[in-house]
Length: 37
Image (tube, rainbow, N blue to C red; front, side, top):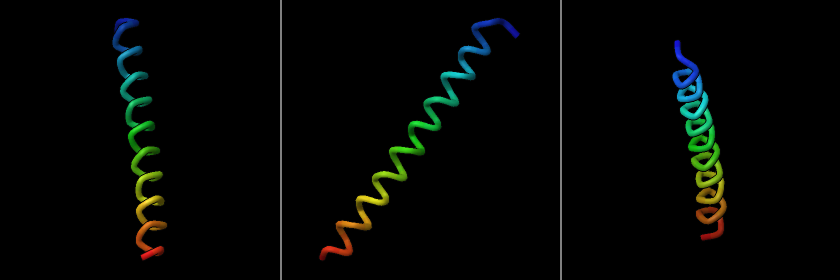
């Protein structure tokens, strides 16, 4: 494992966590919008 491989894995996990957070926030927002209708 080169240092770059570890860095790439770290970036991958960060992107995955960020995407999951955005998905959760959007889902929560959509639920609020739907409940308002």
